[in-house]
Image (cartoon, rainbow, N blue to C red):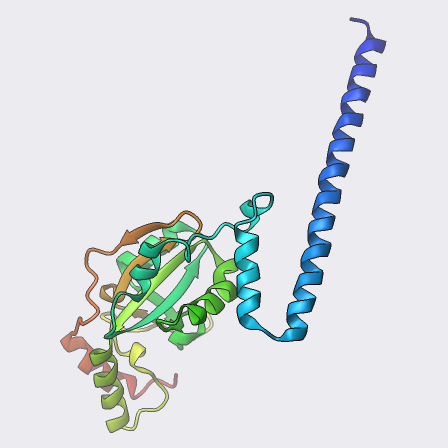
Length: 234
């Protein structure tokens, strides 16, 4: 095969590839245009339920489903893993790497000063969960589930109120290690790993449970933390 024949073959291949790319691009442009029109119509109506249903349609789309893979609401086991207790307060946190989710499960949830900056409280209402999940899932594929008994929440919230401590919340007390300061001189707290139920890969539906999970866990250290925390300007 001479050089001219090879050159013609390469040019033909590139032309076919360009036609294929143009076709794919036109498909994507049509998809984007249609999606924007639909979103615009939903925005005018201000109907959140319709928006969530449309997101579900995108997730189940055969052509573009890979961009929207999400098994959280199609898998009962995942929802039950989050919602299975009536007597606990549940929070969710997202990570990009599974190693980070596993570390949180094994060592506890680290947070800077305020627990609620990166952990979202969710109720048993699936619409509430959908809204918060769709808002935060871009932060990572792994959803860490934190569950704390309401009895623990009310007990330590009551102690904080009784001692007129208003610059902290109960989560700042539920640590087995003293807080440390980071490079910005912010206090870093570490919620006990006993309150980490486990984590879910919401794209695959895989659930990893924490064998040490105990939402009712209490420790003598928590009461001692009350004394120390009075001096923290959180």
